[in-house]
Image 1 (cartoon, rainbow, N blue to C red):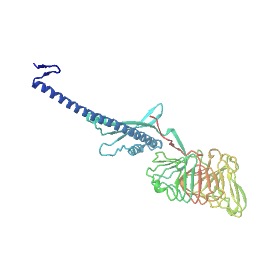
Image 2: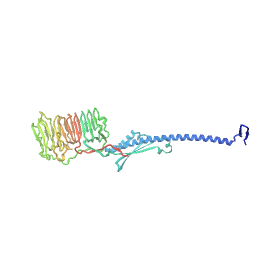
Image 3: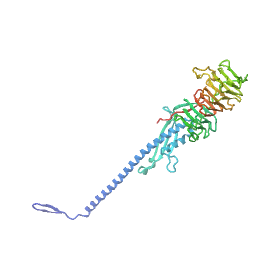
Length: 450
């Protein structure tokens, strides 16, 4: 027992020496404190790692969502353009641009496309993007927790269609060539090129092309190599490559008969009026020369069959001109062709189309809207050259032939075009409009729907 010492001012106890048990308990308290400190340190590191993981995953999710959104839209654009075979490649490429590369040897991303349907938005493309994400903390427990997977859905095209008004049916080679300040404008409609070649379209020498859409069957058309030397395509023109659906010229419901054909009445000086007796009737010529020797010619409304000869508009001389006609339809068959000389003053208006001076041309039944139709068996080219007062309002349809237009910015054609190929040069101007049915290209801006 401790001994107590007392006195007037001091009172204290005198302790006996510490036993072994007490010393052990004091050492045990020190070890617990050290272990607790170590545990709290590990816990703090774990929380920091967890916080870093969460932050990294949130960041990766945002990036993955952006990649999925872009991939869905890219795939939907390909489907809208009729090039569904390219949708996976387009989705992979755009995902890579957003940081999700499907070609990596280690931990590559994956982009999965699915066609989905819903009453709220119809047919659409769903893109699912996934990628293993390195983790400091969660990866220790489960690798699945470190894999990021997100999805996005894009409506394919929005159901919009661009009607074709320039159809180039040649299946190979350069089938559209603009040079030397030529100007091709498809107003409110599109151009479709059936060529599968890499040089299908060339726009050079200060030429311009403007259209709602420019579609080409070629999936490897090199626009950087074929649009140069001052040539340009309007930024508003939606270019779609690798389209699956080609364009075709309309088929005549009734083919004019090439019977009772007479010789070419042209070639003499004077003032003449030629053609059918009425807009609903027809006449057949073995070639027709208009404006020879400075003659002045007016063509009656109706159907003109040109059989194995030229429909030739010569340049006027001595102040005379070849006036052409309103409400005319020319059917070229056999080995016929169209030639409009440089400087010819021509005014040709299709049945039911607007006349250059106002008013509407007489109708010609099922041939309304067409100025020239060259039979598909006829491959002879059509040549329209210069002339400040050359005006053609109506479609030029020659599915197996080349149409050449140039040498004068005043040469204006308003109407649809169908040819094997189109060559424009020397300031030639072509304003195409959708006045006949040549097909359409499903386009529009694909939009995300979820």
